[in-house]
Length: 382
Image 1 (cartoon, rainbow, N blue to C red):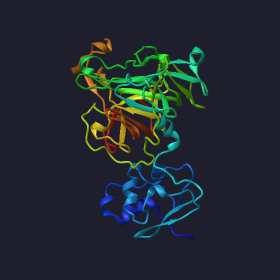
Image 2 (cartoon, helix red, strand yellow):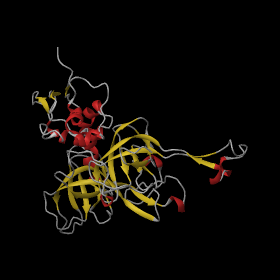
Image 3 (tube, rainbow, N blue to C red):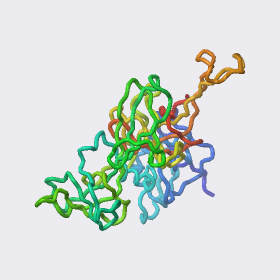
């Protein structure tokens, strides 16, 4: 009969005193754990820890697990001795487990980026046979590729959303539409919106960036010249339809990280500074494994792997017990209102960082996340 064994995540409690106060195991942990295909390091730690985002510190505290990103499906994680970890290796036919489910974030890693301006980028001025949309194998005619060499590959991107920063105290606590038309000019049609957006509270107005969504790729086959003023780019197979106004940028071989080590933010933000400013696919709410846009980026010290807890901002409700309840809610002033506590929603981990904003993946949650929710330290209690 096998003795009861603690999982690898619990070893830090026995061997590394500096983590004992910070790491708490769940009471229902198994004797051993066999790593499965589709697992992530976050998920594995979540089976044993109350705070799964601490897994890097736990595994790095055990020298026998030299690289947590080289744990494979079939590996058996268990406690062989009180002072060291034994990893029973399984077959090496599968790829090692990762910190996050890459299959769910890769489309955003590949297809979305944020820039401060795009008007200088080359753009599609027309398509083969003067069509409205171009598909694989068709030619797109591009202005602004002077000096480019035939054979150069480009990503064809579309400006879709402008993220903006506005002081709520000077205006109002509302979301506003920042969709862009085919020229990249702001429009107001809800049904065309790829991300819904909201303003974030600070002093004054600031543009956080333009979101570019990759539609397709193509190769330059003919440069402008000899009376022809547009270059020819042949659209690749696959991808989305290309239209007039789409922009071109050089293809990046590997523009993003594939491994993520969760860690807390490097600084404490002033309340209201770090918030959810977008959720995908026309929704105002997102759940576990959805991508959200955040109002902070590298200039605030945020980098890939930064973990936040997400909180619904506490309501400011009228006190109808103490004050008259026969009037409209709008007639209750601040003195007759009660601010309620913020409500914990879940955790988000940043996987793509830009200067003034970032994208994160909702790793876990007990309720949906919405635009305007507050971001705090992952261990925040309120």
